Image 1 (spheres, one colour):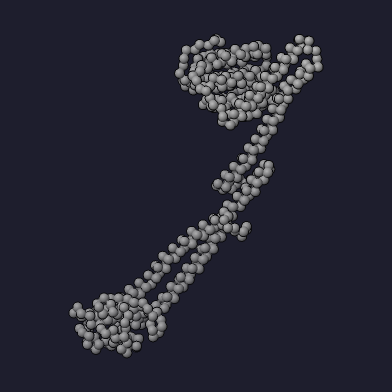
Image 2 (spheres, helix red, strand yellow):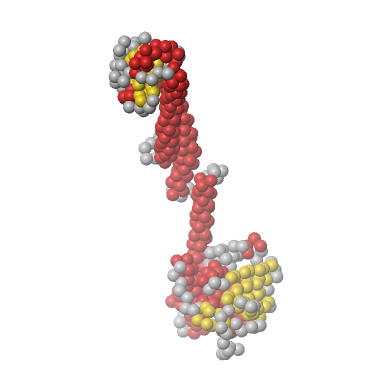
Length: 477
C-alpha cells in the first residue's frame, strides 16, 4: 500500500478523519436501522395477535357467554372456533389459571405474567419472554373477555419469536458485514486520496530541500490539480525568481565593480603621477586635480545612487511634501544642464504649455528630471535636441522628456525600468537610474510611460495629480 502509514503524518490524519466520519455515520445508521427493524417485526407480530383477539372477542359475544361459569363451560368449543396453526391460544380465568389451551398444556397452569395481570384489570397488554416448558422466546398478547362491562376472563394469543430473532440476527449480521466492507472500501479510497495529496507534497518537500542547497534547476510537475498544482507553480516561480535575482546580483556586482574600478584607477594613476612628477608644473598639477575631483564626484554619484536604491527597496524613503511648481523645478534643472549640453553639442530646450502645481518632494522630483536628462544625453548624438515639455490635462500635471537619440527597441523597453538593467552594457552607469525614477514616481502616486523608436528617439512621460496653483515666480525664467 505504498509508503508506511505513520502516526501524526498528514496521510494518517486524512485516513483517520475519513474513517472516523464513516464510523460515526455507520454507527448512527446501524442504530436507527436496528431500531426500525426491531420495531417493524415486533410491532407487526403484536398487530397480528391483536387482530386475532378482536376477531375472537366478536365470536365470544355471538356465543352469548355472560359470566365466568359459562366461559369455562364453552371454553373448549370456543377454542376450536378461534384457534389457528400460527399461534397458541389460551383462555384464562380470573385466578390466572389456564382453562384451556390450543397447545395441550392447559392443566390448571397458572400464568402470572404482566400481560395477564393487565388483562384481568380490563386492559389489553403484550409481553415478551421465555416459555419455561420449551425454553423458546415467545410473544404474547392478552385481551380481557368482557360481558356487561365486566371482565370474566382473559384471551391470550402466543407465538414463538425464535424465527423472527433468527431473521433479525441474519439481517444484523449482514448489516455488520456490509458495514465492514464499506469501512474497507472507504479505507482504500481515503488511503489512495491521502497518497495523491501527500506524494506530490513529499516531492515538493524534497525539491525545496534541494533548492535550499542552491539547486534551482529543478522543475516540479505543474499538472497536479487544485491547490497542489498552484503550490508547484509557486515553487517553480520562486526558483525562477531566485535565479533571476542571483543573475541581477551578479550583474550588479560586475557593473558596480566596473564602474568603481574606472574612477579609482584614474584617481590612483593621477595621484601617483603627481607624487612622482614635477609639482612645479602648474598646468599638469591643475589637470590632475581636475581629473581627481571629477572622478571623485563620479564615485560620490555612484554611491548616492546605490544608497538611494537600497533605501527605496527597504521602504525607508520619507517624502517632504510641499506645494511646488513643476515649471520652477524644470527651469532650475535645465539651467544646471545648459553648460553640459553645450559641451556635447546637444540643444536642450524647455516647452512650457502650462504652469501646474503638484504636491511633491521638490528634491525627489528634481532627481527624477536629472536622471531623465542624464539618460537622454547619454544616448543622444551631437547636434540633436532634448525637449522638456510641461503641460496639463483636467486632473494631471504632465512632464515629458523627449530626445532624438538612438532609441530603445521593443525587446528592451519592457525591461529598462528593472533594477541594474542596461540596454548597452558598454555605457557608463549601474542601470539603477530608471528604477529609482519609477520608485519616486510611484511614491508620488504618479505614472511613468516610455515610448521609443530605434534611431528616432525616446519620449518619457510622467503624470502627477495637480494641486492648488499659485502665481509662478522663477529666478531662472
